[in-house]
Image (cartoon, rainbow, N blue to C red; front, side):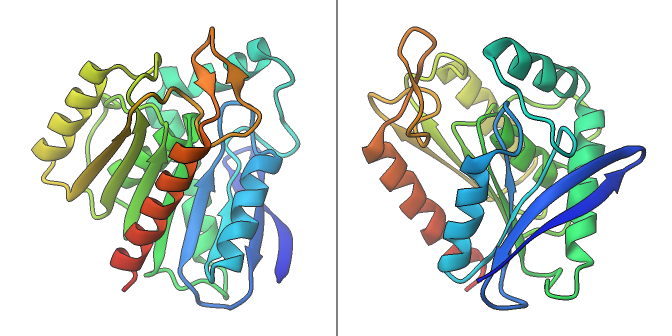
Length: 233
């Protein structure tokens, strides 16, 4: 397996992606991190995707070497991007543009996934109108960005815990209405008895509503692989 770190820019910001693959020109999956930053969790996801025959790319939203070390720091890192979704769009599109130019990437066979805050990033990349085949959100924030919408080219898959306190059933309904209005090919899979961060084995905070659920993780990962089989088939 080929593994490398890759620096790229968004205006004055220096960012660092992690890339893993076994075969050049395989479908490329852009992976967006949760609120802490580009940590070991998304690096492992890139490696798992490489093992499955894809090019896994863990992108960086905050900046090279920037990781939160507490709930407060994580929130401070994420907040500016939640408040300014155009700023977020520019940052994530810069990562997409940098990766699609790499010689081992087929720019017409790309998709994105993301976890928590990264789920929002994955969806907002699709909302930006770039040429990706699909976008997957794992327990992501689903809110409408409230900025100019482009024609969405990607198919959309949102994987969601029904009891997630951060994204309520009414928020899921609003997201479905938005996707329908934009004429997107969309799916929402909802897992019962499941809260936020269900794919993360380290999530164990019932008071905050972040708890790992191995059953939901397994089901959601299988749904993702089925989705990739469809969009890249």
